[in-house]
Image (cartoon, rainbow, N blue to C red; front, side, top):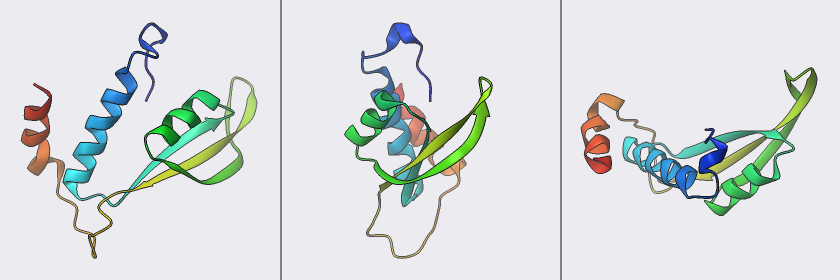
Length: 102
């Protein structure tokens, strides 16, 4: 997720992430994953502050701006009490989610 620089450090990304995570938890997801191009200290710190933990680094995984970049894989466990996967389709939770933001 990218937030325009005019809105950085104003809670926009955190608010968007919280709503997204709420939706994913409501759908029944058990693991949330974030992939961060490295180095990116601000993004790493942001994800750590909302409960993501580093799961690994893939070296030279991407190519942009004429160079290779590593990516960090970050993970947050949610719904740990669920014993077997059972995701609800977005159609089943869409109205709940939309009602929570309007």
